[in-house]
Image 1 (tube, rainbow, N blue to C red):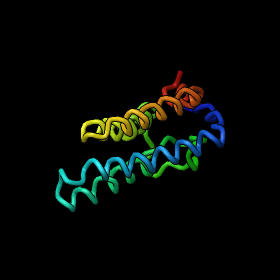
Image 2 (image 1 turned 135 degrees about the vertical axis):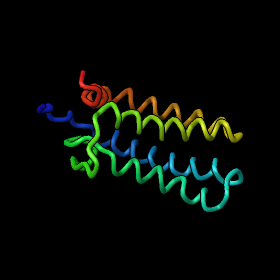
Image 3 (image 1 turned 30 degrees about the vertical axis):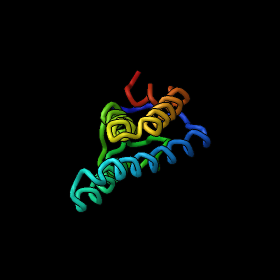
Length: 124
């Protein structure tokens, strides 16, 4: 099955997404600290970053276009939402609700302006 080319993502939205990725890794680390053993605190952002970087859709214009482990678009979207919104939830759950809501709001803002890519991922 041949997929159409992924729609371009504006540079500002790619920049926002990169900031959200970093914020999510920091949030997961902060949420894990004090609740998990030190080795798990270190492993949490490493595992999330690994999953984020390895499981991709071939030809995704918001990524390098390469996919070390190719996955369907819906799987990639689920990974993104699980990490980004999971980090927001983790902040709320660990007593940092303002930061969690800000992160969730920025995630929603990002996806509101990434609708063509999201539709491409889910195959609509």
